[in-house]
Image (cartoon, rainbow, N blue to C red; front, side, top):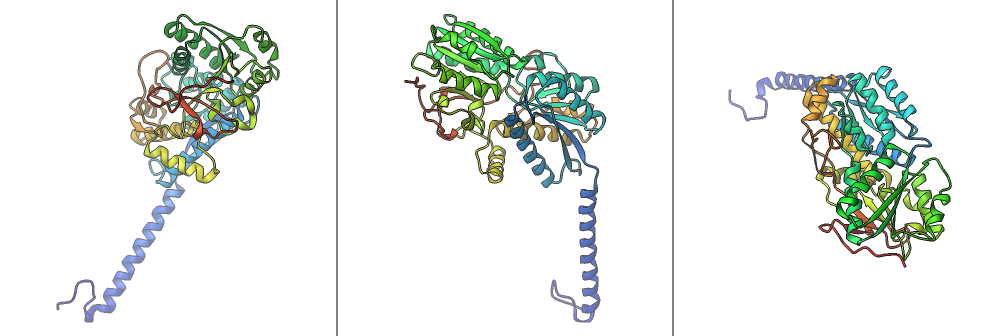
Length: 418
């Protein structure tokens, strides 16, 4: 008996419809079962130590956490990794090596995480590196810049954030372009601060040998830096460079301005800790921020990838504000790690480490891969984009700040304070 396609033959209509109905119900049941199994699967646990309380940089910790959370949501929305959801377990490092070490030990031994992402302070990153090396657990660093971390040569440690040598190179290039003869740097008493101050010294000698450069180490937990600043009033240098995380970084910048040292018609002020792009910058720095030069690892006029555009849009929708580089860095750390786990097809630490070494994945700001050269760039993403910006008005939005370096990206020439 002939019948039209898609329509049951008259003699078999009831039987065919029953069969079709049963097939549909069976398919729906299997779909629900599959979804249920996917959600019921044991999660892949990732540990994330970050500073959420003093003396750590709370603003940086919360920004990095936001980026990690965006990555986790996007990964789980896409079905997770290896058919399993990601579960991120955050711990407060308080920005101190002791707390960071304890937090990492707890995440590995008690929570049974398969990998670590996180941390903002290099001294804490150094402590975490020792712990993950002891246990053979992969660690993708969010924001620890100190070259000393990578110079250890630990196979477990990878870095998708910027690094001291690159920031020192940027600072020295700015000093050279301005033709400065005298520069004083204030650096916090940590691996990051002292390390970057020394790196800057090396690059200034190489790129601008006529410049007299010196640095002074300050206690990052101090509240008053006037004893170090006041001696500069009588004989001010042509530039003061600040290398301190918040809150100390904000205090130094404000006191330099309040004491009439910098920024001024005689003295440039340059921050190389990327504070200018943090969301709480203008809440903590008022008139002192005008005319300040600062490193920016993200500026709205900088090129980002399609993935970066998606992350930025999601973050802006959730928070109602611009995305900072720490959000991108937090995102990239977890995104890169998840890609490695998926590529390895395994949650065994040694398999994840092997996959990380061969990383070639599109992140928010470019294609991420890791250098294998021993030293400061070991297992480091080398091509981290950056710019040097300048605010020309108090409370100026980041997107309106001028880009003054590199020349290929510049929107204006640097203007000294009046």
